[in-house]
Length: 243
Image (tube, rainbow, N blue to C red; front, top):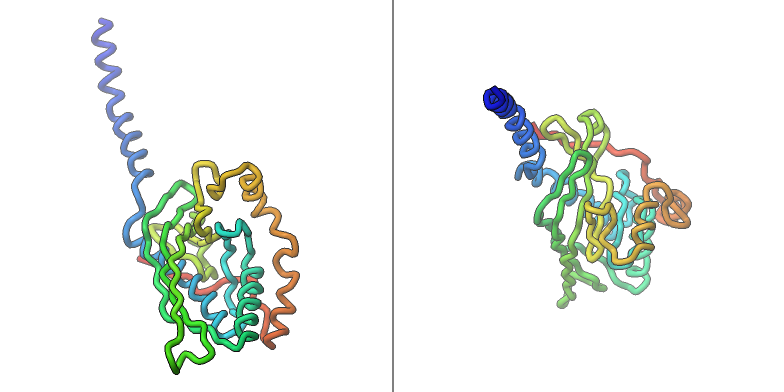
């Protein structure tokens, strides 16, 4: 009698266990190559916006993505990144040189995903000239290969509306919210940027609520006035959709 009950329970449990195993396996499946390529295109668009600003000095109509610089351990909002790029360009011009992008590529190296975020690991391969005249002589070509962790939020598809740094895929919206550069790579296990001390981890946890001193917007007007342009609009547009 007891053996029969045990057999019935085991048989009844098989479909449930199979479903749970299938569901867990499906959730842990890595993102498709198509999605990875689409995320890389969004990330490349963000990188190119900064290089365009360094070259032209024109205030961008699209906002910049916030950046956590692993080399300096400094967080910059999108507006702070614009201000910093304008200062760099001003210093280059003051030295009698010009900035000219030669090549920009982004090579994805992997992804990590949970229910709310997906991280695209990638290597930026960029090269540029800093010269008084890039059309004559032999200007020096500078090459950089920084590593990035591009962090995307995962939400409902309507969240993609008006977001230039987002892509729709499989009924979800993947919107880029931060760019983290090496050596302080993003570690999803502890929700920090992989830094080596507790103070830096506490700092990272405050990023979304409290930007750095002199936060977003405080100096954006002066940067716009310097170049005679308009301050960047506080919205995004032009999202891409993959069927």
